[in-house]
Length: 111
Length: 114
Image 1 (cartoon, each protein chain N blue to C red):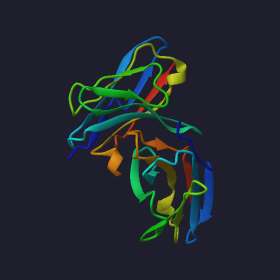
Image 2 (image 1 turned 90 degrees about the horizontal axis):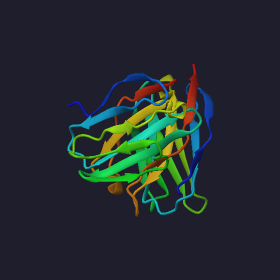
Image 3 (image 1 turned 45 degrees about the vertical axis):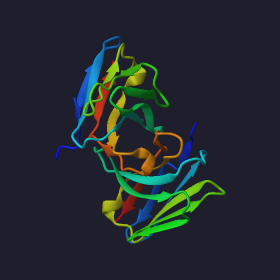
Image 4 (image 1 turned 90 degrees about the vertical axis):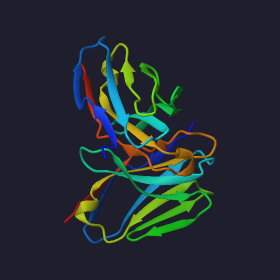
């Protein structure tokens, strides 16, 4: 089945860029996504990229997809304390209705 | 617009007890799902449904039952609770996961099994 892995923790200083990485095993996903979870809340969609794209930019967010290495990354420019949260990557679509998430990366932004 | 509503928010059970976690959505979404979230394990899919009368297993279905008699509701049943089922449970719905439909999450239900 699908396996999605992320590093568990990332700490950055306010104003720096953050890069959260993700590797996945199932190449049949038609899109890959990033969700954000703030303390005590459910997940909210941050952004997604279709599997036929290499990059997607949305304001401070840049998503890079390397299909050959099955590697997905999320770059947050000018990271703010409000960006402190857990970030989940995952894949969906294709032949399955399952949406599988990774282990989540806790981003801690130091003032 | 309520979105996805889960009840209860907190529950403590003794081993062997049964209970149902309720989930309702008012967005007319065909797709609904249940996840559990555990430290270091991320979110794992328990069961999902692509429409009324249709359910399927996710990654960790053992010990859980679901049914989908209406589009709006997707309850999750624990038949005989075990300490390993202590977790935070999230219900989520989407109009079309195959087409990159956004998954909308409830606020979660924290379950402790003693």
